Image (tube, rainbow, N blue to C red; front, side, top):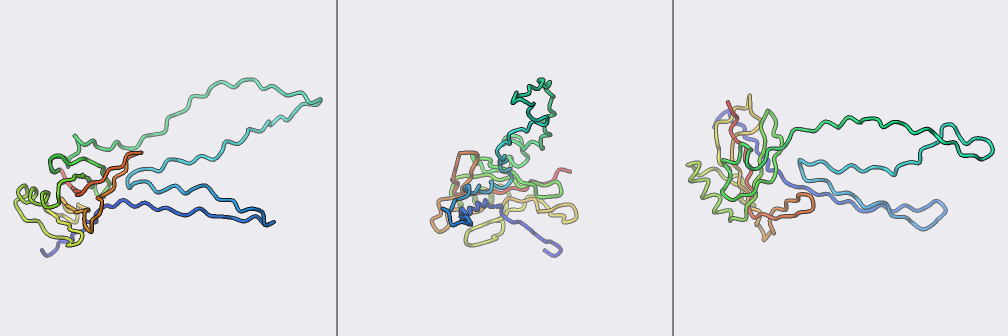
Length: 207
């Protein structure tokens, strides 16, 4: 349709692993390996901070003559102001995309899409064809094919206004079993899950 500009990248998880670097000493001593690399976090999360070893505090007054150790008076505890917390992520039961999700699909995460919109990801092990049939019946249209391989289909949930929206309100379904793939890998803490089909939802903007 003229005047439309649809932009719908599908969010993918990327993990980058780098090799350990080896440095030789100037005198030709034995090479030492650096610390193992830390993989990037899943999109939308924050990598755990890496703190350097705590340095031994210096004694500003030095050591008194005669080798005696100077004893400092204990300092009173200073109350610390807690760091401000970021906005809470919507839960699976309260986010505005839940009503558009496939029944039984598991809520995974959400990401900022800009202009007050968000991407909401849901995972399911139902076949891609079953998901398409469900949305064809719900949205009352056949959607449109974005890619053949791997299969990706989009169903519009409302009109796209490029003056006020970053992405069109829609449901995008992607098949992650293409070429015998084990499925989309979702990592939460130490828990790993795989899903055959991923559903990305941008719900209509509230007026």
